[in-house]
Length: 300
Image (tube, rainbow, N blue to C red; front, top):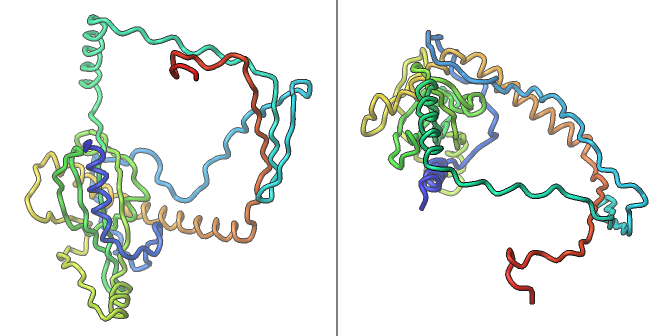
């Protein structure tokens, strides 16, 4: 099994304990009070999504076929829309790109030299594989159980955090840590409502056994490692992530509320004005030259 597929398998397994997820963007009103900001050199890269729609895309140029080039037309009605199928005169296509010549040994050495120089001048960048489960209860702030695979390795690091990772999942996609290294986040996450899970289990004559959660101070968000302690290098991105959470908590919360508001408004708009199927036109042409026998083998 390739390492990347193993990582995705572990990531999915880390989030499989999520039995209840009210909404991927929802955050309860009783979130923990805004933590005390701390001074940090770490920073979030890019904007924090807050539900503001992106600017409209530039209209693409239409594909116009002169009437004289239309050889045959078939019209069908399906799903409330009109599908027009037209046979048109062949269109000249650009020639395929020339095959790339294999590089010489000298070019390989030159490339390696340039790569080494680039790596010296630019901070390293890596992808953080994270699985997070946010446990929510009416009378206590959220607590997150996190599994993290540093450097894409198969060995995981597990920790509890007083940070609400729902805010991180929706608000931070990449950041730099205190050493200036860049990190991008690939996170699978979900919510567990403890009261709801308790009621669901009770309805089936069972008892929901919520995990034991460590105590955290009421001030800034912190985390506690479960099991073997990782090296300082391995845990550095997680420390930076918590620093950013404390520093940008108010903005992360505001952006999350904005995304939720935009989601509800979009749902209401779609319900009031459901989109209508658009008519489509499919163009095709026939060629006289058969497919190359070298590519597909002998024609029988």
